Image 1 (spheres, rainbow, N blue to C red):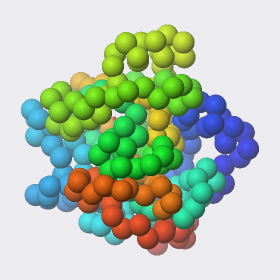
Image 2: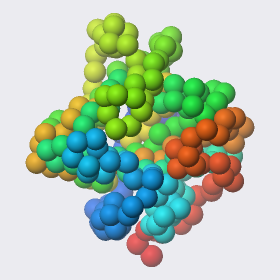
Image 3: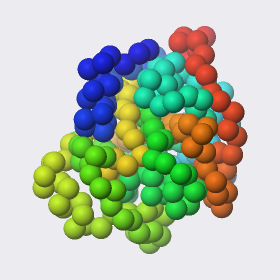
Image 4: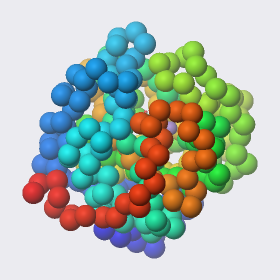
Length: 257
Ligand code: SIN
Ligand code: MN
């Protein structure tokens, strides 16, 4: 699947791109069916909410499950990434971020490159985050918020927050978020299950808690050019994979075969 020139221009201008109906409901069902078993595993790659102990993030999924092993090579994710970045690309991180109904906690304002730079020694903010909505994402169940065009602003400083949530995060100061949002506004990324979403490494984003009765599960694949690989190995492999083997797209029908 190739992005049009118009989609590429929109991605460059706004820093995010929504792709409605990227995957069919039948394909989404195949992905969803894998989650209960994966979430039930006693595995350090399953990170739980501080209070409720529900899974917040399940990582390393392409090494734990054959459906997700295919999904990281899916042409509907990889071909757009290969248009935007210079291949060869490697799989940096693979996860499902859950916001369980009634108890999914927030992610505070951040951009991913702060973590990739300070924790993993990644040289440049090139990595792309490729999402697939596994549930319908609405204004109610904790959608991602973005400040469009924030990837074009001077990259803000970030500080490590190890207290607010169960997942340490390099966050951006509220004053910086306010001044960027005043000029550019905020959008939420919503859509039906099967929607795709692409955003880059210096895009400012966050997400609120989910007090709705509806789960919000989003698959996320981060890819990075091999030429921009990590230089520090302090985090567990599931946070940033060491295997720099180039990934290439497989058959478009792979999830249903
Ligand atoms: C993230 O920023 O990595 C996660 C945000 C979310 O899933 O809500
Ligand atoms: Mn993030």
